[in-house]
Length: 156
Image 1 (cartoon, rainbow, N blue to C red):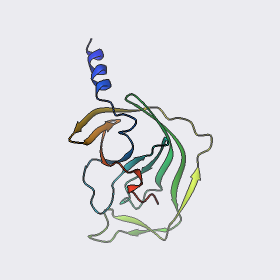
Image 2: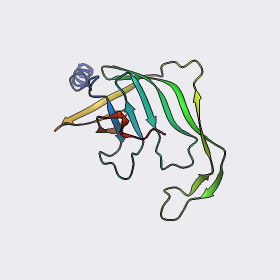
Image 3: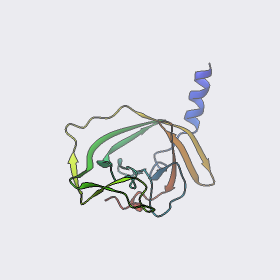
């Protein structure tokens, strides 16, 4: 009986297909000098997932693909990714870099996924809607909708 009650609550607080359109940033509703790790969901059923741009040693920087929203299930199919290649490791600048090590003189290339297939569903839960603002958990990670315009981020 408890499972039924939990399931009913999740259905009544789901995010609609219109509400998901926009930029969703992890852990904070505030945008400083740039977005942190984030999703951009577009009207045509496509998405861009931007890894934390301050992590200057991550090889994969962005995922692109298609999404479907089915109640509390978010189904993603990754079709492309952006990767860093080349460069050399250097010490991060004291006081300005968030990490001890950074890449220098690296390049970015876009790679198409071979035979893309839907990933296991992500689950949207604990949706809060208050005064036009929305936040939720996506696979237990807290995301805040920070813009209704998915082009608000420079998706480089």
